[in-house]
Length: 221
Ligand SMILES: NC(=O)c1ccc[n+]([C@@H]2O[C@H](COP(=O)([O-])OP(=O)(O)OC[C@H]3O[C@@H](n4cnc5c(N)ncnc54)[C@H](OP(=O)(O)O)[C@@H]3O)[C@@H](O)[C@H]2O)c1
Image 1: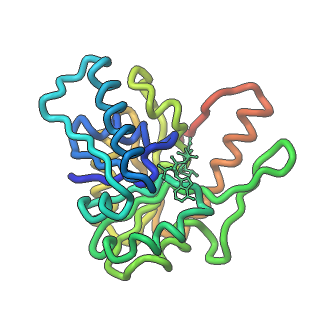
Image 2 (image 1 turned 180 degrees about the horizontal axis):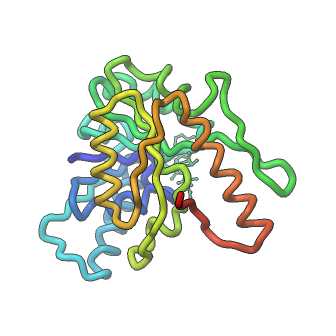
């Protein structure tokens, strides 16, 4: 697949790029194309230094709009407060695409985080309302820690709960989750229940801080 990672210059975008580039073409999106290109070059060097066979690996960098136009599937790796403006900027390029959201709306209050959803009830539902009707929205990867995702030596054993109203798009995300390696995709139901999955992330951050743990995620067993 051609996968655009918007805001792919940031923390969690890097991990998706490194993991999926082994099987898919990756296009890093940024507000500044030169920043996207330099991130793409950096990720290619990291893969090379990890010993990957680079012959079939493609990672490029474009501005967010061009990256969206070029891709079949788009991952939104920007903070919730910037997401709706970004969607307005790329709206026409989102027609008939799959849009993946790991976005968690949350706030810091003193020493802890709280889930802070928009009036629609979740980031996923606000995003669904903002995109063209032909765009299929899938909500997943909220509970995966960026540092573990980008550490290619880290064999994760966590669950990725997938919510969507489109069964075909959900299947594609099941396959992409298997490609990441050591992540188990789980069907979480329709997009309407994404709030439950999104709200686990501030809980994980609070547990990590209060108990001296690092980069914790979830496994249901
Ligand atoms: N970090 C994690 O462990 C983690 C885990 C699960 C889910 N998530 C979710 O993933 C998303 C990204 O998190 P992150 O930690 O990767 O974020 P981040 O590193 O703080 O930012 C990601 C990218 O957002 C872009 N950005 C910044 N301000 C922007 C603006 N005003 N408009 C458009 N783009 C802007 C930047 O890219 P450019 O400057 O190149 O445009 C930046 O590199 C969030 O919604 C978060 O809730 C994160």
